[in-house]
Each structure stands twice: as structure tokens, then as C-alpha cells.
Image (cartoon, rainbow, N blue to C red):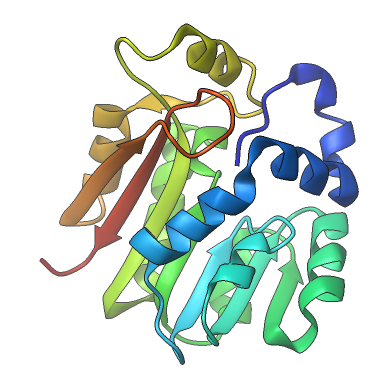
Length: 207
């Protein structure tokens, strides 16, 4: 969710260290809120999780057909050990998704991903997500966000995040609306145990 210290970059490639930091920051609450209030998956839905990390959001979803992608083999191995047959986890670039995902999805997630991507990369991701969504599906993102008058400690921590492309709310929305006719944003500052500003985008093809 929030990777906040430059010196931890190498350590956070290890699944155990990544999960420990997430626990300390309060990431379980983040996943719970995301699943309940924004993802709103129903049993039997197909869910694609792009940049799934160790798959933590799956603990808060009902019984769904879940596919998770991540570039880090340690994260994928940890997710496979934790969830077994409850989900399918693929180590590789998300551009493999059309071949490996097999079909359209009701929910596509990119949790903590956009702020790692340049605008062109983020646009390509959204175009890919659009191509894999069912007509009534939703693409959901969750990222750090800059805003006026945010707590100084929040800005300090965001400045030190591993992702170097944190944007403002209008900038995230502009990216989304280039691809999705219906994109809504939700800014939250109450999800972690430390001051932090997040933005959730909920994007759909239909109004």
C-alpha cells in the first residue's frame, strides 16, 4: 500500500519484509475498506489483480475467480503458499494478461501501482484494463496522492515512497478519463496508522 522509505527498497523485495511493513502500517484495514466499500465483488465474479503483491486483498473478497499478476517471484510464491487453489497467481509482466487471464473480468484491480508508472505506462495499463473488462465491470486503483493542505508528515512520507509518480487528484482523474467515460475519485486520509493521503479511482465503461 505505502512503501515509504528509500532505504527499504531492497528489503521490500522480500515477501516477509513487505508483509511486515504492511502490517505495521495497518494495511489490513486498507484492504478491508477497499473490498467492502469500493471493490464490492460478489461471489462468482472474475477478479484480476494487477501488481497483486502477496495477494492480501483476496482475504477480504468472497469466493471469486481470482487471478493475480506480479513481477516479483517471491511475492507470487508467498501468495501461492498462503492461498493455494483459492486463486491463480502468475509471475510476470501484466502485458501477459490477455494470454494468461482467459476471458473478461468483472473487477480489475491495480492497488498501489499507478504511482509507480509514467503517464504513458499508466495509460497503457488503463487501455489494457478496458480491453479485459466485462461491459458492466469496474477498474479500481489505489495510490498515494498529493493535495493542498495535506498533513506535512503525509507529504513527507509520500515524497519518500518507492513510487516516483504520485499525482494530484485532478491528474489521476485526467488519466482515467482518457480511457474510461465514467471515472470517479475518492480521497481518503484515514486508512493507515500514519498520516497519509490516498486516492481511489473507480472506473467503468458504462454510466
